[in-house]
Image (tube, rainbow, N blue to C red):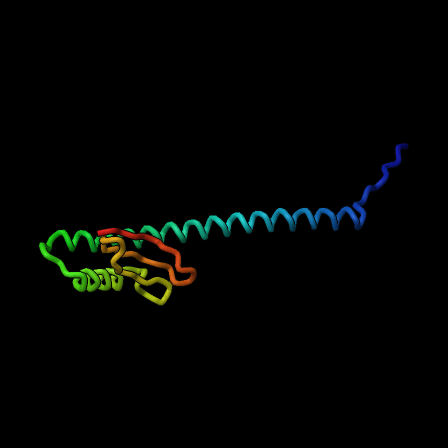
Length: 118
């Protein structure tokens, strides 16, 4: 008669397996979080580009536009967009090197999302 010996996992082996699974889960969670943040950034940048594109389209219709009118149109388009809801983003319209520059900025880190030189 052949006697079968029962094999059990030792406590050390179980702890090592749990540690390996925890490390793999942590790496997976970080990767998913990075993809989520990249997707969120892409969406916000796309919305900012659409806001500036709408401003440009509205400006094309008018012949002579003052700086104040550009700022007004930029503010209107920004408020109508998803970015205008809340206090996470803002617009800026300034004169730089002879050009008028309109931009959309994320307030959290002053990151430029989109910019157009007129």
